[in-house]
Each structure stands twice: as structure tokens, then as C-alpha cells.
Amino acid sequence: MMRAAIFDFDGTLTPLTLDFSLLRAKVEETAREYVDESVLASQADQYILEMIHAVADALAEEGPRFRQRAFQELRLLEVEAARGKSLYPYAKGTLLRLRSKGVKVGIITRTCIEVIETVFPDLAGHVDTVVTRDDTRYVKPNPEHVRLALEVLQIPPGEAVLVGDHPTDIEAGRAFGTLTAGVLTGRTSRAQFVNAGADHIFDDIRGVVGLLEGDR
Picture 1 (cartoon, helix red, strand yellow):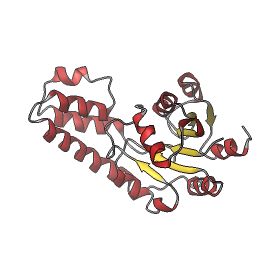
Picture 2 (cartoon, rainbow, N blue to C red):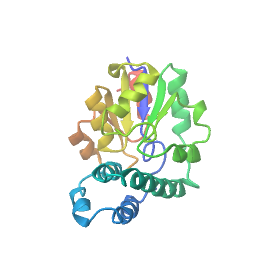
Picture 3 (cartoon, rainbow, N blue to C red):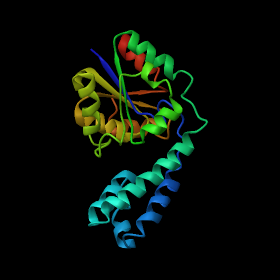
């Protein structure tokens, strides 16, 4: 029985407009004021948030200062990218339909709360909880991100589905024991979702309603 649906945000509920290359370049530019190229090279395979934390951890007294600056720069770029865009036209209706059927709805995202509020100002009327990177260092694909959302909703992982447009969403859900669903509205192909082990793959989040109604 599905009692909770946890959604990623960018690429899942709203079009993906972030230029991740630009974000990384800006953070690396700031990091070069604190560390040499060898440290950045050691983080080449890390996602941006994990890179920020790793560089900050490697610094001594300057660590908190670098972390604050890096996240502030990210926040400015992310909010700028969010201005003027909106949710997918079917997103609000789908969330409301799930809630009308007794399903609790949450959002987990690696972005900041200002982005969510910019794009989704009436958020409170559509979802039961939001967990951003402001709430935890351990964001998806770390399962702690999922745990925090389900803890607020008071739903066990076996009765929840995690829905997202990226393999990190699938990884996080699988690690915490939820069902997982990949949506093809981002940059991930069907084959990549299959390789990631997604339980379901939908064109968009409307497919989640089918899970509830037993269509899939």
C-alpha cells in the first residue's frame, strides 16, 4: 500500500534550468582562493555539494568561511535560474490528487528553500514536508535525505515511493527501502533508469497516480 510519495524538484516537478557547469566553475573559482589545484582535482568525481563540504573539511579555521561563501554563491545562481519559471502544468493537480486519496506528499531536493519558494509559492497547500540541503548535509543519494522526509510524514519506507529524474533519486530510495520511480522529464534516459534499478519508469509524475490506482 502506497501511503507517501516523495518527489525530487528540479527536472521532476519543474523544468531543469540549472547550468551545472557554471555552478561548478563558480564554486571552484572561490575554492582556488583557499586550496591548490590538487585538492580540486581530487574532487573531480564528486557532486558540487559534496565537493564544497570536502574542501571545507580539508581546511582548518578557513573551512566555515569557505563553506558559507560557496553556498551563498550557489544560492544566488540557483535563485536567478529559478526566476520566471514555473512547475510543469500538471504538477499541482497531480500532487492534489494524491493528497485527496490520502497519500502524504513530500519534496526532497539538493537545492535551497529559496528556489522552491520562488517557483512554488503556494507550496504549503500542496505538500506535507520539504527537506532541502538547508536541513541536512547528507542529501541524496545519501538515504538520510529520504529518512528525514519520511520521519516527518511518519510513513515507513516500504509504504512510500521516491520519484525523480536522476539516478541519484533511485539510489537514495533503494538505499532506504522505498519503491522508486524515474521520470523522463529531466536528462536521464529510460536505459539509465533501468541500469539504476528503478522499480517504475514514467513519462512524467502523473504515472505515480497509476501506482495508487493499481494500473501498474
